Image (cartoon, rainbow, N blue to C red):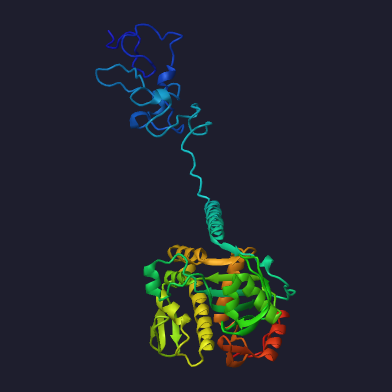
Length: 441
């Protein structure tokens, strides 16, 4: 008797396990759920065993299931995941599996190389957008802080404009917003209102920029005007230049300068004591070469000759002092020009412009206290600022208004008399935007 159960021939051609007592039924051939990938068809062998020789599988495509001792040959496929088309070697099956290699979703997908050019482009575009947003936001913020309080349209009998742009830059003794402690610290006193402490005419043109200081004690003609508060009409008079500012503010100061020079003033900018000191402190102080020992109680000056960095308090004292200087008010105007140029140069350095912790405090301190005309925008302030910086860098000329008598005796005390022959030549060169050849005092 054969030792093999009925239906098992032992020749390797049987497909079924023990208990099959009859020939292979017609409808019970290979079970799809336990189909194995043929050796060499691209899929891994089941359970990691080596593929069977072809002679053990009469169909040549289905490897024989290995029977475990004491178990049926039938394999439910769940322990290998092949019911779902996944073997040990990867996510796909054989050639017949749509998820196998060559199928529509088969095999490991090739790794797409990183597109660095595209990534860099996206990064640069993002950076540009962010910078534009910050720049536009900063511009709107800064422009909103400008105090457009001076109405030059009220100035009477204005001369025709020339080539280039003329800025009138005024340093006033305004104590607006200062506490009693600030006034004491900065030695400003407690006078009400505001008067001019420095007056500078800045011409910006194609043939070099020119800064001309006008001594506050200049003896000039103050033209007739209407009082801004009283509406009363005042006649023409002779007086010191800074008296026009005290009488009717910036508009009359502009009218007086235009009347005595024939130059058209395009823009007006004014800063007070407190704002000046805060700007200096915001940039970390300004280095200046003090021309001589300076000590004066009214301005609070106590400086030694030589190069040194001045903070806001010392800088204000430096530009205000006139007593004890050999040239009096003329020496003071020279010190003012020297310091303003150095301040503009310091504020425009990369360490300030590229450092938001310095840039924003500097802009905030300056713009909060900067009074300008109604037509002056932030872009005009920028042009004025960089023109001053250019002059300090040797790209222009610094001078005083030509003077014939620095100690003219008048009914208002000692005054400064202009040299009108040179003044007319200077005005002509500025008006036509020509290179300035006139020398000042």
